[in-house]
Image (cartoon, rainbow, N blue to C red; front, side):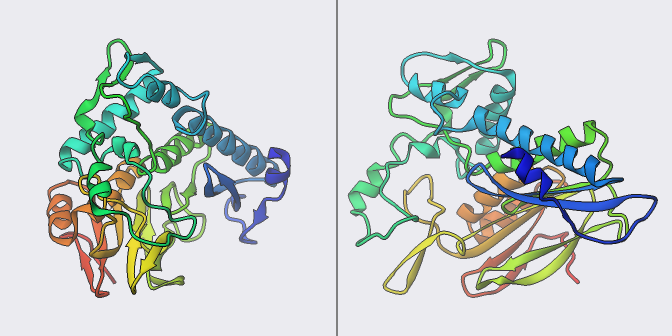
Length: 325
């Protein structure tokens, strides 16, 4: 399968600058679309680099997936309320950083969100809204403070039975960062990784130097609200336009508030810009949950992080230092 994917590389631009050309490949990984773009001297070199990018993404998925019974994450979940589980230092580091972001955002980002009882479905029809009491009860096991990480022993312990962790709001950003690091180590001087909207760039585009990125219009995903030029930077967008349900003309987003159990309303999309895709991924979710005022207040306190919001009434709001053309 990998050979087929790699051999179908698309030659994007028929130009050559210092023998460097741009190649891209799009494929399904981690249940979503991934797009790998590399600057390379030959199609054969590009094919090798993209094959390595796919291998690294699969490695990350096998580490963090809560759906694969053989993953270390699944082992942590199986032992919730029973005992700490020894895992790799890589996974310990990711969970420790997730907990720090949870503390920073007052729990509005929380990987124990996976403990939420399954009351909402966005991949099949729902005949009615869930019962309010059931929704309130559904969040009882969500609390990042009950994720105990021992960085000395490399163990993780979920202190309550029924707790789960999941990396849906940080995993793709983490994968993008790891793939970028792997490709840079292999000698790829410039490229782009797009993990279904979690996007990172490095190095110079052969013609334009910066990479031109278009952000989707939440009212029409086939159109864009504008374009940004990225250089050694990342952007992640969270929104209500990809997965949602509708009742009585009200759109309910797939992003659930970890403290109330109800879909978050108030914003249509949040785009976070910073140097690290993992951080941008987590912050995009947190800002979406926090809402316009509290979300912008948080971002304006963070050095090197900016954001662009589209509100429910289609107004565009930005953090203090984000410059729009």
